[in-house]
Length: 362
Image (cartoon, rainbow, N blue to C red; front, side, top):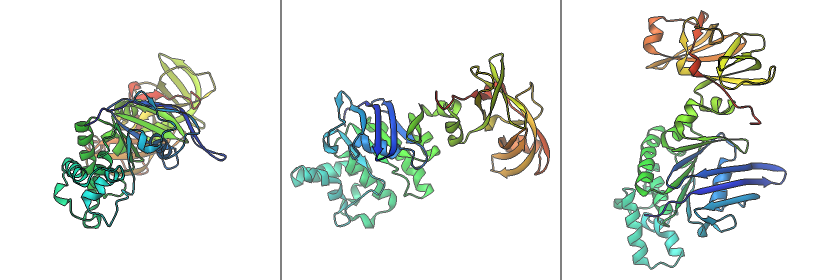
Protein backbone atom coordinates (compact mmCIF):
# COMPACT_ATOMS: atom_id res chain seq x y z
CA UNK A 1 0.00 0.00 0.00
CA UNK A 2 2.72 2.45 0.99
CA UNK A 3 6.41 2.55 1.77
CA UNK A 4 6.88 2.49 5.51
CA UNK A 5 9.03 5.22 7.01
CA UNK A 6 11.52 5.22 9.86
CA UNK A 7 10.59 7.85 12.45
CA UNK A 8 13.58 9.52 14.07
CA UNK A 9 12.94 11.76 17.07
CA UNK A 10 16.07 13.72 17.97
CA UNK A 11 16.35 15.50 21.35
CA UNK A 12 12.73 16.67 21.16
CA UNK A 13 11.20 18.75 23.96
CA UNK A 14 7.81 20.36 24.47
CA UNK A 15 7.42 23.18 26.96
CA UNK A 16 4.15 24.87 27.94
CA UNK A 17 5.07 28.06 29.84
CA UNK A 18 6.95 26.83 32.91
CA UNK A 19 5.85 23.20 32.44
CA UNK A 20 7.98 20.70 30.50
CA UNK A 21 5.69 18.03 29.04
CA UNK A 22 8.41 16.22 27.06
CA UNK A 23 12.09 16.58 27.93
CA UNK A 24 14.83 15.91 25.38
CA UNK A 25 13.38 12.66 24.02
CA UNK A 26 15.39 10.74 21.41
CA UNK A 27 13.89 7.66 19.76
CA UNK A 28 14.25 5.75 16.49
CA UNK A 29 11.17 3.79 15.38
CA UNK A 30 12.14 1.32 12.62
CA UNK A 31 10.21 1.39 9.35
CA UNK A 32 7.32 -1.07 9.26
CA UNK A 33 7.32 -1.70 13.02
CA UNK A 34 4.48 -1.50 15.53
CA UNK A 35 5.57 0.87 18.31
CA UNK A 36 3.60 1.47 21.50
CA UNK A 37 4.21 4.57 23.63
CA UNK A 38 3.28 3.33 27.11
CA UNK A 39 2.98 5.10 30.43
CA UNK A 40 0.65 6.64 33.02
CA UNK A 41 -1.51 9.72 32.39
CA UNK A 42 0.58 12.88 32.05
CA UNK A 43 3.83 11.09 31.15
CA UNK A 44 4.16 12.85 27.76
CA UNK A 45 3.20 9.99 25.42
CA UNK A 46 0.26 11.72 23.70
CA UNK A 47 2.21 14.99 23.42
CA UNK A 48 5.03 13.05 21.72
CA UNK A 49 2.53 11.46 19.30
CA UNK A 50 0.98 14.85 18.52
CA UNK A 51 4.42 16.32 17.80
CA UNK A 52 5.10 13.48 15.34
CA UNK A 53 1.74 14.25 13.71
CA UNK A 54 2.35 18.02 13.63
CA UNK A 55 -0.61 18.84 15.89
CA UNK A 56 1.81 20.20 18.52
CA UNK A 57 4.79 22.41 17.75
CA UNK A 58 8.19 21.14 18.85
CA UNK A 59 9.87 23.45 21.39
CA UNK A 60 13.35 22.01 20.68
CA UNK A 61 14.82 19.20 18.61
CA UNK A 62 13.89 17.62 15.29
CA UNK A 63 11.58 14.93 13.89
CA UNK A 64 12.50 13.02 10.73
CA UNK A 65 10.18 10.82 8.71
CA UNK A 66 12.29 8.69 6.40
CA UNK A 67 14.85 11.06 4.86
CA UNK A 68 12.76 14.21 5.41
CA UNK A 69 12.89 16.60 8.35
CA UNK A 70 9.21 17.26 9.13
CA UNK A 71 9.64 19.33 12.32
CA UNK A 72 8.01 22.45 10.90
CA UNK A 73 5.70 20.90 8.30
CA UNK A 74 1.89 21.02 8.71
CA UNK A 75 0.16 17.67 9.46
CA UNK A 76 -1.11 17.21 5.89
CA UNK A 77 2.41 17.47 4.43
CA UNK A 78 4.12 14.92 6.68
CA UNK A 79 3.09 11.56 5.25
CA UNK A 80 1.45 10.59 8.54
CA UNK A 81 -2.20 10.00 9.42
CA UNK A 82 -3.65 10.25 12.91
CA UNK A 83 -6.52 8.31 14.38
CA UNK A 84 -7.97 10.18 17.35
CA UNK A 85 -9.23 8.68 20.59
CA UNK A 86 -12.78 9.98 20.00
CA UNK A 87 -12.83 8.75 16.34
CA UNK A 88 -14.36 12.19 15.43
CA UNK A 89 -16.72 10.81 12.76
CA UNK A 90 -19.20 13.18 11.08
CA UNK A 91 -22.69 12.10 12.22
CA UNK A 92 -24.47 13.57 9.14
CA UNK A 93 -22.29 11.71 6.60
CA UNK A 94 -22.57 8.05 5.71
CA UNK A 95 -19.65 5.71 6.38
CA UNK A 96 -18.20 5.93 2.85
CA UNK A 97 -18.29 9.75 2.85
CA UNK A 98 -16.65 9.80 6.31
CA UNK A 99 -13.81 7.67 4.98
CA UNK A 100 -13.48 9.76 1.81
CA UNK A 101 -13.62 13.16 3.54
CA UNK A 102 -9.90 13.98 3.25
CA UNK A 103 -10.03 13.17 -0.47
CA UNK A 104 -12.96 15.56 -0.87
CA UNK A 105 -10.88 18.31 0.77
CA UNK A 106 -8.16 17.62 -1.80
CA UNK A 107 -10.61 17.98 -4.67
CA UNK A 108 -10.65 14.33 -5.75
CA UNK A 109 -13.72 13.66 -7.99
CA UNK A 110 -16.72 12.05 -6.28
CA UNK A 111 -16.62 8.74 -8.18
CA UNK A 112 -12.92 8.21 -7.55
CA UNK A 113 -13.08 9.03 -3.85
CA UNK A 114 -16.14 6.80 -3.38
CA UNK A 115 -14.31 3.92 -5.08
CA UNK A 116 -11.24 4.41 -2.89
CA UNK A 117 -13.42 4.64 0.23
CA UNK A 118 -15.08 1.33 -0.63
CA UNK A 119 -11.63 -0.19 -1.14
CA UNK A 120 -10.63 0.95 2.35
CA UNK A 121 -13.88 -0.32 3.86
CA UNK A 122 -13.22 -3.70 2.28
CA UNK A 123 -9.80 -3.70 3.95
CA UNK A 124 -11.42 -3.27 7.39
CA UNK A 125 -14.32 -5.62 6.49
CA UNK A 126 -17.02 -2.93 6.54
CA UNK A 127 -17.94 -2.60 2.85
CA UNK A 128 -21.50 -3.76 3.65
CA UNK A 129 -21.94 -0.73 5.96
CA UNK A 130 -20.92 1.95 3.43
CA UNK A 131 -24.34 3.65 3.40
CA UNK A 132 -24.96 3.65 7.15
CA UNK A 133 -24.47 6.60 9.47
CA UNK A 134 -21.97 6.36 12.38
CA UNK A 135 -24.83 6.22 14.95
CA UNK A 136 -25.99 2.96 13.36
CA UNK A 137 -22.63 1.28 14.06
CA UNK A 138 -21.17 -0.39 17.15
CA UNK A 139 -18.11 1.07 18.88
CA UNK A 140 -15.84 -1.46 17.22
CA UNK A 141 -17.28 -0.68 13.78
CA UNK A 142 -16.86 3.08 14.34
CA UNK A 143 -13.27 2.42 15.30
CA UNK A 144 -12.67 0.61 12.02
CA UNK A 145 -14.30 3.45 10.04
CA UNK A 146 -11.88 5.90 11.70
CA UNK A 147 -9.04 3.54 10.81
CA UNK A 148 -10.12 3.38 7.15
CA UNK A 149 -10.40 7.19 7.06
CA UNK A 150 -6.83 7.51 8.32
CA UNK A 151 -5.48 4.89 5.91
CA UNK A 152 -7.09 6.37 2.78
CA UNK A 153 -4.44 9.10 2.73
CA UNK A 154 -1.85 6.37 2.01
CA UNK A 155 0.38 7.35 4.96
CA UNK A 156 3.93 6.19 5.63
CA UNK A 157 3.08 6.09 9.34
CA UNK A 158 -0.23 5.70 11.18
CA UNK A 159 -0.50 7.40 14.58
CA UNK A 160 -3.10 6.06 17.01
CA UNK A 161 -4.07 7.89 20.21
CA UNK A 162 -5.50 5.32 22.66
CA UNK A 163 -7.65 3.80 19.89
CA UNK A 164 -9.10 1.01 22.04
CA UNK A 165 -9.95 2.97 25.20
CA UNK A 166 -13.65 3.40 24.36
CA UNK A 167 -14.25 -0.30 23.71
CA UNK A 168 -15.49 -2.91 26.19
CA UNK A 169 -12.90 -5.50 27.37
CA UNK A 170 -14.06 -8.31 25.06
CA UNK A 171 -14.11 -6.06 22.00
CA UNK A 172 -10.69 -4.60 22.89
CA UNK A 173 -9.10 -8.04 22.54
CA UNK A 174 -10.81 -8.66 19.18
CA UNK A 175 -9.98 -5.24 17.69
CA UNK A 176 -6.44 -5.51 19.05
CA UNK A 177 -5.94 -8.67 16.98
CA UNK A 178 -7.40 -6.91 13.91
CA UNK A 179 -5.02 -3.95 14.35
CA UNK A 180 -1.98 -6.22 14.53
CA UNK A 181 -3.12 -8.19 11.46
CA UNK A 182 -3.76 -4.96 9.53
CA UNK A 183 -0.37 -3.52 10.40
CA UNK A 184 1.34 -6.70 9.26
CA UNK A 185 -0.56 -6.78 5.95
CA UNK A 186 -0.01 -3.06 5.19
CA UNK A 187 3.61 -3.05 6.32
CA UNK A 188 3.49 0.60 7.41
CA UNK A 189 4.82 2.05 10.66
CA UNK A 190 2.24 2.18 13.47
CA UNK A 191 2.77 4.37 16.55
CA UNK A 192 0.14 3.62 19.20
CA UNK A 193 -0.34 5.46 22.51
CA UNK A 194 -1.72 3.41 25.40
CA UNK A 195 -1.66 3.22 29.20
CA UNK A 196 -2.40 -0.54 29.10
CA UNK A 197 0.60 -2.79 29.68
CA UNK A 198 -1.32 -5.79 28.31
CA UNK A 199 -2.22 -3.91 25.11
CA UNK A 200 1.38 -2.84 24.52
CA UNK A 201 2.75 -6.33 25.17
CA UNK A 202 0.21 -7.89 22.77
CA UNK A 203 0.72 -5.42 19.90
CA UNK A 204 4.19 -3.92 19.88
CA UNK A 205 7.47 -4.82 18.24
CA UNK A 206 8.90 -1.89 20.22
CA UNK A 207 7.58 -0.66 23.59
CA UNK A 208 8.61 2.82 24.74
CA UNK A 209 7.92 3.27 28.45
CA UNK A 210 7.60 6.96 29.35
CA UNK A 211 7.50 8.70 32.71
CA UNK A 212 7.50 12.37 33.59
CA UNK A 213 8.26 13.49 30.02
CA UNK A 214 11.20 11.13 29.53
CA UNK A 215 11.84 7.69 28.07
CA UNK A 216 12.64 5.17 30.81
CA UNK A 217 13.18 2.27 28.39
CA UNK A 218 12.65 1.49 24.70
CA UNK A 219 12.90 -2.21 23.84
CA UNK A 220 11.01 -5.22 22.44
CA UNK A 221 8.25 -6.54 24.76
CA UNK A 222 10.24 -9.54 25.97
CA UNK A 223 13.20 -7.35 26.97
CA UNK A 224 10.86 -4.99 28.87
CA UNK A 225 9.36 -7.97 30.70
CA UNK A 226 12.60 -9.91 31.28
CA UNK A 227 15.02 -7.01 31.81
CA UNK A 228 13.31 -3.81 33.00
CA UNK A 229 15.86 -1.01 32.96
CA UNK A 230 14.63 1.08 35.89
CA UNK A 231 12.58 0.77 39.07
CA UNK A 232 9.76 2.69 37.38
CA UNK A 233 9.58 0.24 34.45
CA UNK A 234 9.68 -2.77 36.79
CA UNK A 235 6.89 -1.36 38.95
CA UNK A 236 4.77 -0.04 36.07
CA UNK A 237 4.88 -3.31 34.12
CA UNK A 238 3.87 -5.08 37.32
CA UNK A 239 5.85 -8.29 36.85
CA UNK A 240 8.66 -7.60 39.33
CA UNK A 241 9.07 -6.85 43.00
CA UNK A 242 11.35 -3.84 43.48
CA UNK A 243 13.52 -3.79 46.61
CA UNK A 244 15.23 -0.50 47.45
CA UNK A 245 18.18 -0.15 49.79
CA UNK A 246 21.88 0.66 50.10
CA UNK A 247 24.73 -1.12 48.33
CA UNK A 248 26.48 -3.25 50.94
CA UNK A 249 29.01 -5.27 48.96
CA UNK A 250 29.68 -7.24 45.78
CA UNK A 251 30.56 -10.89 45.24
CA UNK A 252 30.37 -13.40 42.36
CA UNK A 253 28.62 -10.97 40.01
CA UNK A 254 25.98 -10.06 42.56
CA UNK A 255 25.31 -6.77 44.34
CA UNK A 256 24.38 -7.07 48.02
CA UNK A 257 21.70 -4.65 49.19
CA UNK A 258 20.81 -3.74 52.77
CA UNK A 259 17.15 -2.81 53.35
CA UNK A 260 16.40 -0.31 56.14
CA UNK A 261 15.18 -2.18 59.21
CA UNK A 262 15.38 -5.50 57.42
CA UNK A 263 17.48 -8.07 55.66
CA UNK A 264 20.11 -8.22 52.97
CA UNK A 265 19.22 -9.12 49.39
CA UNK A 266 21.32 -9.99 46.33
CA UNK A 267 20.83 -8.99 42.70
CA UNK A 268 22.60 -9.90 39.45
CA UNK A 269 24.31 -6.87 37.93
CA UNK A 270 27.09 -4.32 38.23
CA UNK A 271 28.77 -3.19 41.43
CA UNK A 272 27.74 0.08 43.06
CA UNK A 273 29.54 2.43 45.40
CA UNK A 274 29.23 1.18 48.98
CA UNK A 275 26.37 2.95 50.75
CA UNK A 276 24.82 4.35 47.55
CA UNK A 277 21.11 3.88 46.85
CA UNK A 278 20.24 0.94 44.61
CA UNK A 279 17.24 -1.08 43.47
CA UNK A 280 16.90 -4.80 42.78
CA UNK A 281 14.01 -6.33 40.82
CA UNK A 282 12.79 -9.89 41.39
CA UNK A 283 10.41 -11.68 39.04
CA UNK A 284 7.08 -12.29 40.81
CA UNK A 285 6.38 -15.49 38.84
CA UNK A 286 9.71 -17.03 39.89
CA UNK A 287 9.11 -16.68 43.63
CA UNK A 288 8.65 -20.05 45.39
CA UNK A 289 7.82 -21.22 48.90
CA UNK A 290 10.95 -22.70 50.44
CA UNK A 291 14.28 -21.89 52.08
CA UNK A 292 16.75 -19.88 49.94
CA UNK A 293 19.74 -21.74 48.47
CA UNK A 294 22.06 -18.87 49.40
CA UNK A 295 21.84 -15.68 51.49
CA UNK A 296 20.07 -12.78 49.78
CA UNK A 297 17.89 -14.97 47.57
CA UNK A 298 14.90 -15.17 49.89
CA UNK A 299 13.42 -14.26 53.27
CA UNK A 300 10.77 -15.36 55.74
CA UNK A 301 7.69 -13.15 55.99
CA UNK A 302 4.08 -13.05 57.12
CA UNK A 303 1.33 -13.74 54.59
CA UNK A 304 -0.85 -10.62 54.24
CA UNK A 305 -3.18 -11.78 51.46
CA UNK A 306 -3.93 -14.79 49.24
CA UNK A 307 -5.69 -14.32 45.88
CA UNK A 308 -6.84 -17.34 43.89
CA UNK A 309 -6.68 -16.57 40.16
CA UNK A 310 -7.55 -19.91 38.62
CA UNK A 311 -4.29 -21.08 37.06
CA UNK A 312 -2.24 -19.15 39.61
CA UNK A 313 -2.32 -17.85 43.18
CA UNK A 314 -1.02 -14.44 44.21
CA UNK A 315 0.67 -14.26 47.63
CA UNK A 316 1.32 -10.93 49.34
CA UNK A 317 3.95 -11.18 52.07
CA UNK A 318 5.69 -8.69 54.39
CA UNK A 319 8.97 -9.13 56.20
CA UNK A 320 12.71 -8.35 56.21
CA UNK A 321 11.90 -4.64 55.90
CA UNK A 322 9.59 -5.12 52.88
CA UNK A 323 5.93 -4.17 53.39
CA UNK A 324 4.46 -5.75 50.24
CA UNK A 325 6.24 -8.54 48.37
CA UNK A 326 4.40 -10.54 45.69
CA UNK A 327 4.78 -14.14 44.63
CA UNK A 328 2.77 -15.63 41.76
CA UNK A 329 2.59 -19.40 42.29
CA UNK A 330 1.01 -21.99 40.01
CA UNK A 331 -2.20 -23.38 41.49
CA UNK A 332 -0.54 -26.84 41.64
CA UNK A 333 2.45 -25.54 43.62
CA UNK A 334 0.29 -23.55 46.01
CA UNK A 335 -2.25 -26.27 46.77
CA UNK A 336 0.50 -28.85 47.23
CA UNK A 337 1.62 -26.76 50.22
CA UNK A 338 -1.12 -24.18 50.95
CA UNK A 339 -0.62 -21.24 53.33
CA UNK A 340 -3.09 -18.78 54.83
CA UNK A 341 -3.13 -15.16 55.99
CA UNK A 342 -1.03 -14.76 59.12
CA UNK A 343 1.28 -17.71 58.43
CA UNK A 344 5.05 -17.26 58.51
CA UNK A 345 6.36 -18.51 55.17
CA UNK A 346 9.88 -18.81 53.69
CA UNK A 347 10.17 -17.48 50.13
CA UNK A 348 13.05 -18.06 47.72
CA UNK A 349 14.12 -17.50 44.12
CA UNK A 350 17.08 -18.07 41.81
CA UNK A 351 19.92 -15.61 41.17
CA UNK A 352 19.02 -15.36 37.45
CA UNK A 353 15.54 -14.09 38.39
CA UNK A 354 17.00 -10.93 39.95
CA UNK A 355 18.37 -7.83 38.28
CA UNK A 356 20.13 -4.69 39.52
CA UNK A 357 18.24 -1.72 38.06
CA UNK A 358 19.76 1.39 36.53
CA UNK A 359 19.93 4.46 38.78
CA UNK A 360 17.62 7.36 37.86
CA UNK A 361 20.45 9.47 36.44
CA UNK A 362 21.87 6.67 34.26
